[in-house]
Image (cartoon, rainbow, N blue to C red; front, side, top):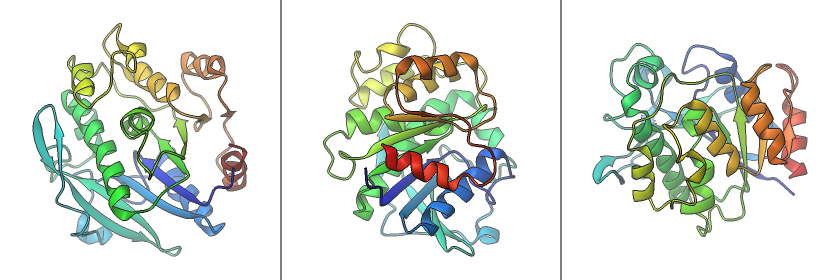
Length: 269
């Protein structure tokens, strides 16, 4: 497959959040792929701890203003953008006061200490990314999702947006990290997903019990075309699940000089 446009849906990107292996990879990989002449678009949530003035974020008026309905409540979508130097790669931020609170000191305050909101937060984030890409009129032929905050993207793209011209030919890659949330998502999570247009059959793999991080990652694997191990060690249950799926799989490629390996994996799909 000839890959020339890659959409990155990331949980966190350096330097906008404290540097972690996930944040560093989500910065360096898109930049490296862009330097190979491939067009990229990169998205992350606008967590409340991200300082707009310091990071030179500004709102993109033409992309903002859409209301996204979740569980019969409307939530306005605000799109902001910043430019990473020296490659001048643009990073788009999905923002909303209901889900990404102002003045928070850490991302963890939102996704770990307010777990009751995580179901709608990740639904809003993925919907926001997809709707923004459609507004950009930019059709990726590969979508790379990183981190559990992006875990709904594969099922949304394969089911809800399956016939959308922007995504119907795109391959979906999901990266598994050793990062997870504690506990389970809100008990009405499946009900809310069905209101989005997903069916009992679509959600059968997570219907039996409350959805924890492992179940959410398995759902992402189910609807992805390929999977990457992005941490040196990941949950053994997930590793076995990936292998049993028979899907193209890239083991951990190391933490340096990995751009070529990712590019080769993309093109192999």
